[in-house]
Amino acid sequence: MFKYQITGGVPLAGTVRVSGAKNSALKLMAASLLTTGKSVLYNVPLINDVYTMADVLRAIGATVIITPDRVEIDSSGELSHTTPYELVRKMRASITVMGPLLARLHRARVAMPGGCNIGPRKLDFHFNGLEKLGARIHADHGFINVATNGLTGDVISLDYPSVGATENLMMAACLARGRTVIESAAREPEMIDLAKFLTSMGASISGAGTETIVIDGVDELHSATHTVIPDRIEAGTFMLAAAVTGGDIEIEGANPRHLEIFISKMRAIGAAIDERDDRIHCRAAEAYHGTDIATLPYPGFPTDLQAPAIVLLSLAQGHSIVTENVFENRFGFVDELNRLGADVRTSGHHAVVHGQSRLEGAIVEAPDLRAGAALVLAGLAASGESEVRRIGHIDRGYENFEQKLQVLGADIKRVETGDLAPSAAPFN
Ligand code: EPZ
Image (cartoon, rainbow, N blue to C red; front, side, top):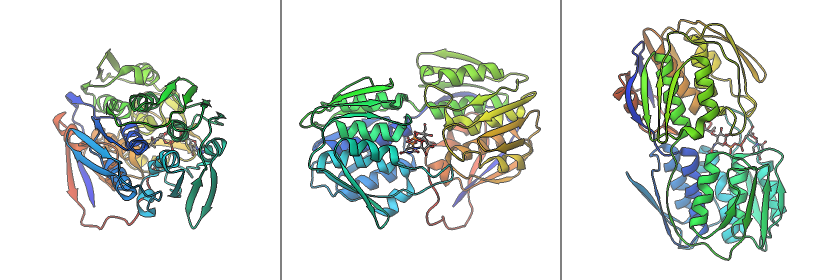
């Protein structure tokens, strides 16, 4: 296993290029199962979740070649409808192979991903929608079995704009008979990216990015090439890195239109943000104002930036109330952050952040991906030495994280801990 050794107090400055979006790339890889051709994806971030998804696709029978500039997926061979437990357990996003396998093979057997550090992560929205399309679903021995004699389009009203359910249903509906309407659909930019890829494969989709997505089923899809959109969560993470370290960072390749509410909150807190079509510049302020934040489905404040934003609010003048509306248990990192000198109290979905903390280096442990990034930011802002352990979580979702920070002046090193990796770290 590895940890980060950090010496904080250095203002980060310079230019960093954001990678392709993890939460789009993984689904685009799954969507490649819908065709018997060879699809090519560009701007895929080389992160552990991408390697895990490649292993899932290989276990199903696809050929996956990953090179620094692209990922080639050839699913023209005989596919298995079963995904292995040990891979799905590692990464919840594997569940998005269910829609494509059901559409293509009329059946799928996917290990239940189980809960993780940020909540139970149920799948009822996925199942209810697939049943509406004509799937029969039953669970046995920790696996979910879905089967159909043929999917038929229908109107699906989601109880909640679930990202994964919207993606699974969009992919399944592409090969269903007739029209599917997904109401209360997720509106994240990753939905638009997936719809663009599916459309380039021959699907008929309209409304992606709005709360109503219409899919007219087609008989078959062909292979396509696609470039993944930039990772808005990584871009927001580097904006916060500039703010918490008193720095000045240009984030190249970022799309400010994917972060509108986040940018307006950063300005309310006091950071100076300049936006261009394909870059965002963030300059720190002398002082920050306590500001209340409530996470919401897109276009609301992204839950994936809640933990890193609390680090900035810890440094602000005055108190802030942060409400986590998306996940059941996403304040797990607060105890670790308080060990660095922050003063955050939580109660249910609310966290009260007492500002003006002087963060001091300490040894902390990353509980999950985004909390791990938040603890790195806190270590960079703190005075003295910090260690962030269990950074395998961070390796899942941030490409070349320490290298990008080092280029910006951060004193951060990846060091072996000598411990064995945990058998199945809870993933989200
Ligand atoms: C995706 O997770 C992202 N992961 C998450 O990013 C992100 O935080 C989340 O969307 C919200 O934006 C990937 O895309 C791989 P949801 P997903 O379905 O699809 C509940 C990161 O750090 N729910 O919108 O799982 C669920 O428990 C990760 O990159 C049900 O109750 O999100 C949660 O409370 C973390 N039943 C809420 O809805 C269901 O059937 C949002 O889940 C599905 C979800």
